[in-house]
Length: 264
Length: 302
Image 1 (cartoon, chains in turn red, brown):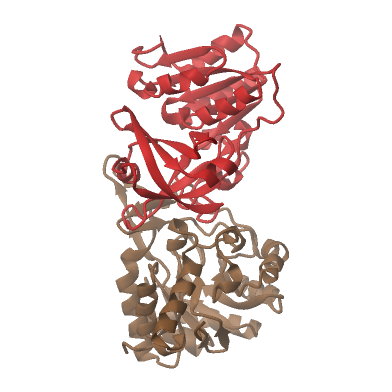
Image 2 (spheres, rainbow over the protein chains, first blue to last red; image 1 turned 90 degrees about the vertical axis):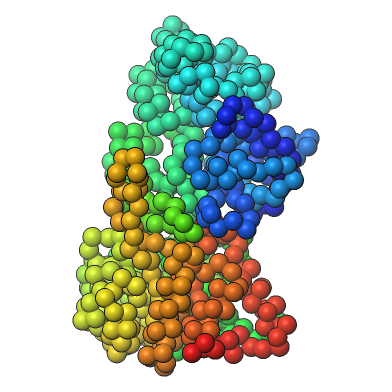
C-alpha cells in the first residue's frame, strides 16, 4: 500500500447524494486490481477524523484516473461531497484482496449481482472480464429507481444480459434482485462464477440461494473500517463456528461460506 | 542530524517517537509506509496468553476529533507473536515493546516469563487500563492496591524493562502512578483511553456493541497533557511516556514540555499511517534549526 497524494480531476453527479469522484492517481491505476479499495482522506481536516473506504469503481490506464462512487450517508461522505476539481485528497491504496478473474476465458459466462450502491466495484471488474472475453450478465436491484442512478454509466460495460429490479417497481421488474437471479438459475442459466456486492440482507439471501444452486461466488463485503489495513480491527465479520475475520485484510472479497451471515 | 536520543530509566531510545499499543498492529503492517527502524519504539497490540477473539461488532464509532473503540483486545496470543512476528520485527531493526494483558495476575506473570530473553524485545508494557474487557484490564488499574500487587508480581518475574500503562479512568491517577512505581515499574505510560459512550439518536442504542468504549484522538489531548503534568510534578524522578491524541510536532513538543521523556502516537496511525516516521523527521528538523538536542525539550513547562 502507498499513501498517494492525489487531486480531484472532475466529478459527475448521478442523482442527489450520489456522485463519482475522478482522481488522478497513476500509481493506483497501475497497481490496483478489481475489488480492491482505497481509504480516502482530506488533508488538514480533523473532522471527520478517520478516512473512509471506497472500492476502486473504475481505473483508466490511459489517463491514470481512478473513479470512486460516493453515496452521501454521513459526516465522512458529506465531507467528500464538498470536494471540487483541483482539490487534493489522500488515497491509501491499493488495499485488500481482489476478485478472481485470471482463470476465466472466452468460453466462460459469469453473473454480477449489485444491490444499490453495491454496484461500486463492478465497472472495474466488468472491464477486466471484457478484456478476457468473458460474457457477464448484470443483475442490478434497488429499493427504487433513484438507487439505480448509476445504471446508464455501467450499462455500456455489460457484455451479457441485463436484469433490473426495484422494490417499488419504479424501474425494471418489481421485487428483489435475488429473486430474479434465483429465477434465472432455476430456468437453466449457468454461471462459472458469480460476483456480488450489496447490503447485508442481500448477502444473507444470496448465500442461501447459492448454496442450493451451487454457484461459485465471491462477495465484496463491507464493514465500517477505521484504518483499512488490518490494524484497528473494527471491520470484523463473524466466522462460522466462532471468532471473527478482518474484512479489510482477509477480504473484502470473500466466499459466502467465510461468514456466518446469521450473526451479521 | 540532531541528537534525538532520550533516556527513560533503563531505556535509551534513538528518539522519543513511539507508536501506541492497539494502533500499530504488530508493526509489520506498517512496513510499506514506515521504516520501523527509525521509530523510538513500537508497542504491540495487547497480547494475551491465548489468542483472543474480541468483542462483537460494531466496535468503533467516530466522535468529534477522535473515536470510541471497544475492540476487546483481539490478538494472536503470545506464542504466535514470539514465533511469528518478533523475528521479523527484530530483522527490521525495530525497538519492540510487548504490551501484555490478562484476566488474572498469573496470566501477566506467565506472559512476562514467556517473553524473558526473547531476542529483539526492548521491554514489556503492562496494560492495566483497557476499558473494553469484562475481566482484567482496567480492573488492575483502577485500584492502587491491585496495581501494586500486579506490578510487584510481574517485576519479580522478569528482568526486562517494565513500562506500566496507566488508566485515566482511575479515581486518582497519582495514586496509580505511585503504586506502580513503588512496586517496581521502570517507566509509566499515560494515558490509555477514557471511557465514553455514544448513542444513536434514532435507535436510542449505543453505537458500539459493548455499550461503552475508549475515547482516543485529539479530543483527549488536553486531558492527557494535564495528567502527564500532574504526575511529573508529583513524581519528578519517574520517567513518563506521554500518550493522548498526538498527531503533529506541536503535540509532541507539548507532551515533552510537561515532562514526558517520550511519546506514543496512537489513533493518528489509523488516519495517517506514515505519521510516526514523519514526526521523527519533523522533530529532527526542529532540533536542527534550533541547534538543540531533543532531550533539552523535556520538562520546560514544569
